[in-house]
Length: 428
Image 1 (cartoon, one colour):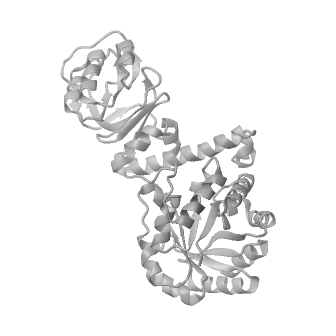
Image 2 (tube, helix red, strand yellow):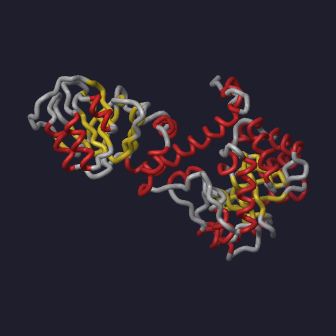
Image 3 (tube, helix red, strand yellow):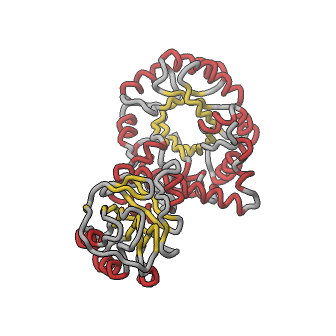
């Protein structure tokens, strides 16, 4: 079959979904999907509205049915869905009833392998049950944890003649890899719905599909621990805080001057108030790109100044965060060194040598371990546990990309509260 581009409308607000649907259809999208979040928030009214507005297009209802297959397929089909999605892990009886209901009401059944650990075995069973399409689905949460692989798709292609859909991380670059791996239906979400110009984004993906040539995308590929720093330097601490469910921020720690950006792994220092020996020793032991994080008890006098800063610049240290006092703020600003502290004071302490290096410390209400990621900008500092760096970086980029779309809609002449239907979503 000719490759099909399906746009997944994973919104919770119908007006925004319809706007992107119109843009993507004009850009060449073949099928339109009422995503699971949309169906859960709006109900099948979303399918009815899509059917009414796009009568010539196939409408997919991503019901993710796990039970009552007959009823859910019947209601989705009556609402206008041409294709209804059922989960592969559903009981055979549910899938069998879904297929029968589809035959009765004119809808085809796509079976989604999301969460299925033995895809090849289950695919053979589902094919016998009469499904029309199989779907390999790399969930959004899985995408956030690492790189995308089409290995399962390649294996499944060798075992079935049914059309295969693939979803998860598809854009104008990865769509070529998906096609080469054997995909028939390319399900695209964020690479269209998060773009400021969904029409042009759709056209770009269609062009890549037709020519089987990768076209560079503005959206960043999913990243790993090894290259997390690139994204952490690009996103804001506000993006990161949102990605961490409003956690990670250090209380009471502020930039010494504005306009700085910092990201690196923590080299931790615990010292006594005013004892600057261990913080200065840390400069010699920290690696290039590290951030020196100092627990000085949150009080003065200063344990850091211009001379220590010059030493950091010579070593390539990314920045310093001090729960305590810093001085020589003017000189540090001239050197453009990323410095954050709780207090600025002219008074320096003395080098007594008490304290420890590279041990867990407590700053700004959080415990920080050596190797945790530390990111700072004009809003302050956030800390990311080392093992969560790749996931948080991916989620922060997702926050930024979604905000870019919101920013475009606001510029088009509306407000944030209207776009998000704020009153509707206030907690009851």
